[in-house]
Length: 253
Image (tube, rainbow, N blue to C red; front, top):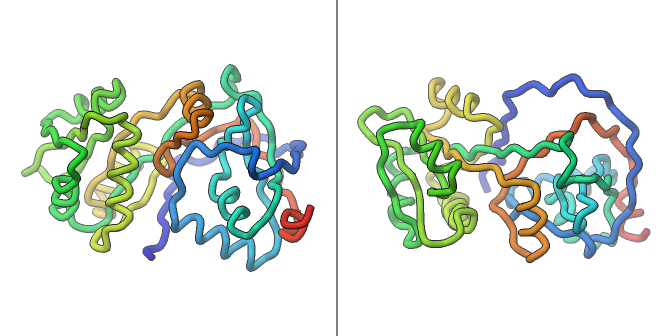
């Protein structure tokens, strides 16, 4: 399985580190809102079983107990037969201090092969567009699930659309990309950072996508529907201090 790639280009703002109260919540009470990346899940399980220590509480909305940050910790603990997970409960939907961004998938490998993979996905339609700004605008207005941006001047940019819900189409596409052995999928935090990857030749393309709204996230999770992996990136005005709880206590609370 290829190594998981996640790149942060924006430096963390200077935020106070706070000792925030957490609760040990039943894993079955919590609702995920994103699919998992198998590489990140594997990395978490290796880390927590190697150290025997759980050090980062999950962020969970008070509205519906939706996991905002901590999906792989939640899924990893379930695989390890744990019963509870440390969680920080947040006022979420109407809290302006909690902000939602997205991660931008990028591709390492062959652009031609990537386009061939996309052409063979039956559920989607590829629409070719010469203007990058138009691609971004149509994705933001949900007229397309993804916009494919690259640096090959001989090729147009691509809008990826279809009849299904745009986020469901994203899930289908990402599943194909994860399973393809000729390319590697990574995630980066900003479009500016993604553009730099193209300029530096570290990636052949990246996808633009719309970050969902907080109310949409809670509603979707309450229906048992999830977004693709790493659709959301939440930002708080503080950094929770690390915790130190043994894995054994989460398995046998």
